[in-house]
Amino acid sequence: MHHPDIFQKKKLKEIMKITSIFLVAGILSFVVASCNNSGSDKNSDIKAGVTKTSWGEFDGKKVELFTLVNHKGDTVTITNYGGTITSFVVPDKNGNRSSVIIGFDSLQTYLQKPPYFGALVGRYANRIGGAQFTLNNNEYKLNPNDGKNTLHGGLKGFDKVVWDATVPSDSVPSIELNYVSKDGEEGFPGNLKVMVKYTLTDDHELKIEYNAETDKPTPLNLTNHSYFNLSGRVTNSILDESLWIDADKYTPVDSTLIPTGEILDVKGTPFDFTSAKKIGVSIDSVKGGYDINYVLNRKDSSSLQKVAEVKDSISGRTMEVYTTQPGLQFYTGNFLDGKFINRYGNPITQHSALCLETQHFPDSPNKPGFPTTTLNPGEKFHQETVYKIKVNE
Ligand code: BGC
Image (tube, rainbow, N blue to C red; front, side, top):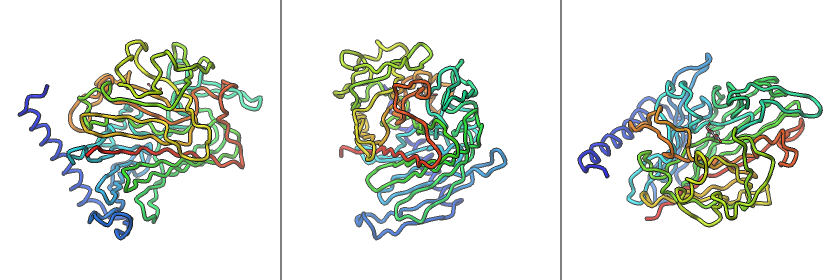
């Protein structure tokens, strides 16, 4: 329980901090795009658009922070360092705004390599066993960075590079991020051009579109690694949030979190979220907590389908996840150890946030039974994911 005074003080501090973010954004930034307000939401005077502020430098490149605002007053902040989402601020059931995505207010913190908070992950999201694979009879060796395995692209994945950002003149606030991953980067073959577009709609939706092309066959698996706490506070455990996942099957893993190659039924296991249940209900039967890939029931990969839903009773917020991807990594922040402190001064501890990473299955390049992750020259890679917040008012 919070002592009411401390609680009030903390709340005041939070409000001041959020207000100062907006003030700084307002004073320092310049409008790089703004959207016509005569559109979808006639009840609102809020001007939707995108602003940017200078956020530092890395690898000799300018790092910026973009703020997307919709007509409802929701904001998403994204930096071109790692294509990282640093906040997604939406109202709760009382109209109070806070970020459902965990993040930090300075580039310095991201340079200390927090575990992929909000980042774009590539060239291969999740693990590739033994840091190697064979493709078209050629053997490729990657940089191992997770024991013997490669995790989230290797030593310097897409989360640790500066992307080129542009603000399209769309009617909905959005930014486009481009990155060219060179042939041989982290051991992967082919020059790969990646374009990721983030959009904030008036329906409290954060949409992510991934596009890529290559000049040599390469494995490719792109995701965003946002950590969510729907209550907006890491002091509330996500074990009390309830979760539904539209998956009858999952891919079990060995002790180093590499899939065994089997595809098993969730029925009768702690992995069963086919009916919504509190995340904490059976977590003790899963060693270390949930860190597992679900085989989504969705069959049609050409359109977005709802694949998961999280509910938080404290804030009254629900998050729906829609995707075109075949898999979903459900991770309960098992390795979060309090080392990183969030923007409100709270340590980010185990189970204080969760990830729902839409993706292809881990280690697919070494698992012939999994859907292929090979992108060939001439093919256009395209995936979409939407995180939609709903509020019980
Ligand atoms: C992985 C975890 C890993 C986490 C942070 C998740 O996608 O499944 O095993 O610890 O990312 O790196």
